[in-house]
Length: 543
Image 1 (cartoon, rainbow, N blue to C red):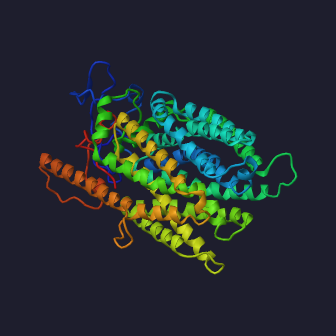
Image 2: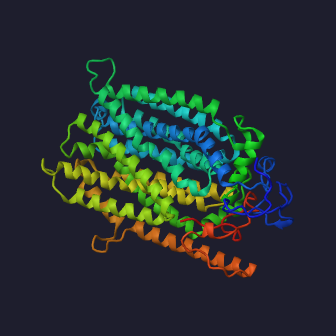
Image 3: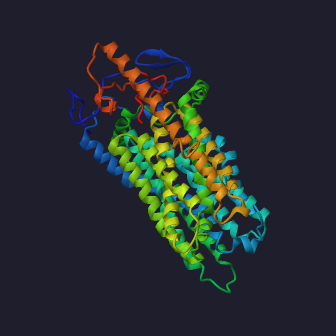
């Protein structure tokens, strides 16, 4: 274990100072011997047992712990999200495998199957996020995965639209906690500057599943004169694999660093102390209504919510209708299934490159804006150019460019996980974000009307309107909101740095590009469940 700091460690980004460790008390909350408002509270008792503020995490130790977590924890995040997107995406693949014909879907019934899933997610979000705060997260996640895997297999038994609607609703209900669980585990194990990369690793499974499911669906199209339809076989195979994965989660994924039997006591302390610089804490089972009220009064939270709804209104509809759109460009069913390999690879490239650029430039919001501009260009081309044999390839490329909007998922979420502190405020914000996620995905498929297929000019016109109020202005609602968000976060950091400089009598010039590494910040209250607005002394926003 690294020894106690005797001076400034040049390898460390922060300097730790001695301080008393406050623990949870039913009567009073304290920090550094000072009574705090009940809104904030003290350090969670289970967490406090493993803290040692005298430890300095040097770069060698930091990389060693990070590598260990990448081997032991990250695969569970990645594969879990793969199965969620795999299971949810089976509907899009089955759409051109005969499910609409075999079940007798007409009019908007197929689009409603995409919508009802998110009604289930919407219903489940509030209780799911509270359960995550109260109960062992790995056990909860494992049970959910098994249940939704069973529901995926139940799709194969449905012979009516109403049966599919019921199964899709329940699937959404049990999937509602998955992304909140993964966000919580990311914050629980990784440093803030690592969030864009880690979230992108598991978000890019949306692209991986497109390739895997595309190959599987392509092979299943050769099923002829069998006892079951090819789309039924798809649901049975995917659901069965999901159930197996849920069992593995129950056995091998730890509920928290403190309860991880795979780590010794010394390693648990190092994992937690490595997170001290986050100022986000690890867990706190008490729900604080003051933090809930702060979340809804914070204008930054509302900017996040507006961006979330706007982007998933677009992303959700593209996900459900992607195969139909590509098929409508003149490609056969089997060609469309194989083209999912290209689309999947492109999606992975988008997620990884955007995360790499965000971390390299330390300008997450600017990178996000650039990708959304590319998506706007692709959408305009896709909507404006007529389909002919000569334009099919170009329109396919335009469709792939339009899919750059998916970057709004991983980068936006990395902003939220890094910039919202206080466990109850995080629960409130995460819940609200996923409600907007569900609402956007509910409305999105309804933009694609059956009479407008397979080109869906009306739907793409709506997408352009969401990207920008007019092509002449060249500004998008999403982009304008992102610019405003960046301004607000920069302003808050500037005010805090100036206040700290005045208090310390230190007027040294601080870097405007990366203020986090230009300051020596005391992290003595890092685990005391302070919100980002309350912790003005130590918390700095990352954008």
